[in-house]
Image (tube, rainbow, N blue to C red; front, side, top):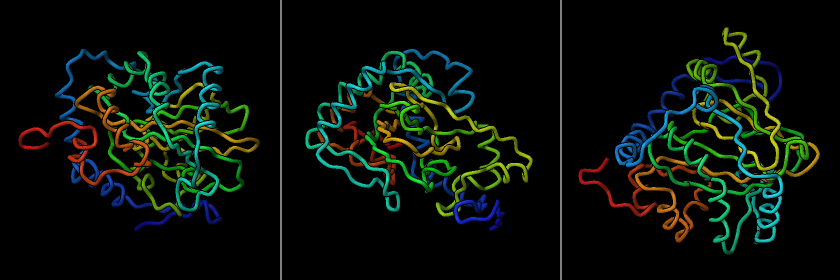
Length: 305
């Protein structure tokens, strides 16, 4: 496995492993059946689909989408904080990122309905060319911290190629200093070919400039200042991204992970709300896409995927 030291420091040494990147794609999309799941869902679509806009998500793999007013975002944050029963660290070794938990989560549906408005719904169906459903929903609270780890270093998320994430900011970048930086899909694909994209957590870096210059890849990170009520809509498995830590206040973020679906999202929500499946996945993928039929309460097709 080739190694390329980017610069000195524990958190700034990249490990390049093209084989790991190829194996990751194979594991989810082919072995796990997620590519076949997407194809099946597209075949089930019964409504017309507009062509996606050429800019934004289709071209770059990410975009900023106005979703709520600042007033509505503040109201949702107040509701969430009043309903929170407890919180816990989202992942090992990220002690400044907490996931809010609720004894009764039924209040989330009206919030999700606001997020998945007619405009957002059109964007999502145009992208997936199918219906979609909420595979995971989390509300995170991130406090200021000095050192970037894991999600706050450049990476793509391990998972099927065909999923989207909506990160809705409930308070503005101006209030806490936090956002998410992105590198467009062209540069991300070049760095994946090089072997960076799915590297080990301890070999993620905060600065891809030295690596990109060494490889002759043009990298221009985009650093959006997000308003309260705006969302970052992006392809986590296809575009490199990294969180920017808050430096002067706590960030509150509502995150939806979306997958293609053979039925509209509300039909799937009826099932996942009863089992609370979308609240408990926490971004962990089912090993086999075939299990998604049970998750959303849809009979398996004869012969399977």
